[in-house]
Length: 34
Image (cartoon, rainbow, N blue to C red):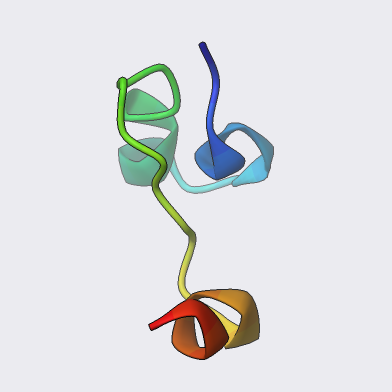
């Protein structure tokens, strides 16, 4: 299962791209959802 981090370029978010959590990268979509 991949989440929204799969499209990131930074190594740290990419480490968590296959976590079973629906992570959001930092940005407008995450702030709107919050």
